Image (cartoon, rainbow, N blue to C red; front, top):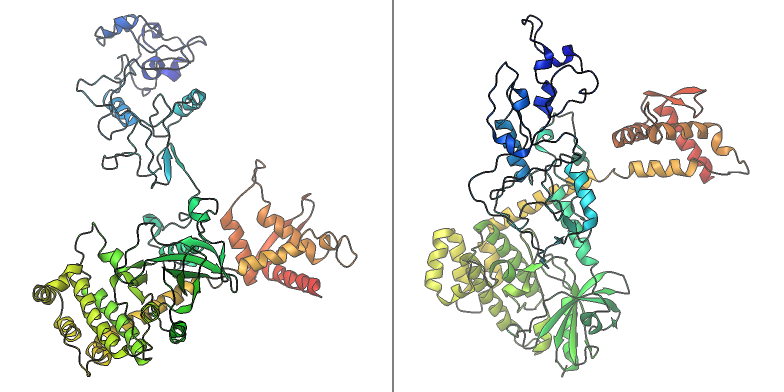
Length: 631
């Protein structure tokens, strides 16, 4: 390094003393000078013993530089400090290093010690321990692999924002989610290995700095349905295709095929069954039908022996019943495939459904009263279903929180219809009594939902008082009518009349949601245009032979399409690197599909000829060539 390079001050400064008596700035700033043996005329002090570095250094214009000692050894391949600051709770080590370096920047004429000072306060170390959580999709491994030491050394030379310990794991607690972290906001935790590929991260919400766009601008999310709706549909599709392992003990206990249903998968928990609703234990399975290939739900009533053959005909009335708030019944039959006399009911399958009981009354949850707006929606749907059932001369007999499914946002359906009619077959003699019981159970369900507790029905005065304080008087009037004594004039029609204004609000909400779904569908309507266009180009480009002509794809309009394919997909930059630009591909294909008048220059592969054509002419070439293939 020449003297003009080392001296970086302004040109009007007074002349300096001899350079041989001044310490090189490269040594002060960087700890070494790569021009030391290549003509640099400044002083390059050698590093002394580590113990001498504790001597105080006083900046002076005299030759005091040989007395300064440094613990940094220039010719060492790897610099390892003798001690490092211990991390505080949640503070990464590299953050402390940067903070220390900022406060201890060297002054001109002073020696620089790159070691961070050892703090006097005592800190607690985090010892990495291998923890396995069966419910977590990640596995944390903290075993030391000697083969990773070289990789860790290479990674340590890159500024990745993580401090690695001796085992190759990040020096931070993965399971201490409450502790603050400085580097987990932007990146994922290093060392977490997913057990399976992620499936719901492919479409993320737009970032804040690109969300507020002008009316003439659009992001990629404007061409697809919303992320939440897409994820819900993906989860439901995944649940519908889920099957049980046939080699497991649970899979071997299930029949391979029953009637025309196969691929059984249990939907309920393996806990002991209670008989609080039905007089027999019941089990729920999902199976596929070999007739149409669709999934259905099979509810098995264990240990039931059909005494009256005419009882099986009671399900025929339910099969003809169709309502948006009722889970449709398909068929019922008896079987011995499970090792006993069982009665099986087949219903429509609604994936990822839950019940009102698990949502609001599950054990371990705090009282969770349903908001009045949502409660009126539930009341409207149940009243509409009961209206249809009672008009058909039937009774639901399953107005229970555990037998009402939640299949969507504020979307409920009556489940297990028709089971009680077969278990306690009476040939329809007690239908009026059962209908009155439906109204009574309907009122009790509203009280439980409004108070957030199933025990609220045992103390009705206080429950009604609570409901009046938090809901409207219309809610109280509906509950008092449903809980009144049964009589011949009490029917579901009066309930429908009482909630008439709420029904109008429910219809309005349903229409708004229908408009939302149509808007989401419209986004996906024309997404297949480019796929169809690519299929047409794929049929034409590089076709070996057509109509006994081996050069068909290299002549005429086909040659233009070949050059356009190279222009879209096979571009390279000035260094010969392939250009992978999805925006360029989408822009060119959309212009081709629209047939705009914009011109494009196509160059042959040998760069000896250039053709200037418009996208409109290229579109005509695609259509005419594809029609030739169809002839």
